[in-house]
Image (cartoon, rainbow, N blue to C red):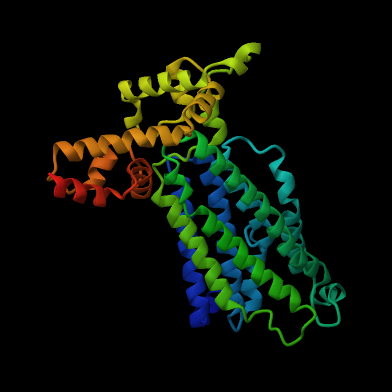
Length: 382
């Protein structure tokens, strides 16, 4: 009954946070049902639930009768800001590598300790709780967990950035649809979630020594954190049927690279590059939007090391550049055959491009002008 009274007494700000928390829980359920990226989506579901728990606790803290509700929320296993850092890294790792994370549970011990402490404190009589407080009425042990939150976010945020950079370097060399993943909003959204919570945790930590900072007067930042969590869930649901290319899975499809012979340094990489590029063009494999370096190496009967070296050293182009140049030439050929065509994007997608940005970039690299300008020039000359 007291909890129901708390819901009724929520301020407009608390109600807004409560609705955002409910929206994150709903998105977490949708992400869990997604057929693609299952391992990563399980980590995302846990992350969204934790963010919803943090938001829910803040919503109840804005209520005039917040003690009962805030205590009830603290008993739940998801109201632990210390879990956000490891969950952000887990989500990135599961997307980029898609392999089991050894001893994952060890990274969540601080969060579990914080949750257990909150439950223990709530169960204590009021007289015994006073023994845990400092002169300002703050729980000294909980203060330690509050101070640890910004550090945890900084460490796991840095590890996530390293993984994302590694994935982008890998995609630049092995994925013909690399632009479809270079622009993915995960970096911004995860950075926004971690950065906002880092800011909130830092201000709350500063409030421990600056009396004029109100611990519960940060609802704007709480709302921003909740909005970032909602955007993160929407981004995942929007891509629910599109598998994210992970480094290990893609590499595992390639044949085992044989040991290079001693005379490999004397190989004619230019000749090999030309031969393999001709086979790629004649077979039409470049039309496949998800064509990767390992899959092409299998078809050519070689390994990724030789194929990459033949393109980079022999032709002076990376694998994505070779493939996208063939796609750009196909679009140009179609435009010459059908000068009246105006649907450039349709031609681009039929040629194998996965995004407008990758199409424009590849066409400009191959012909020196944008596709629309090239079409205009051809119409003028014809």
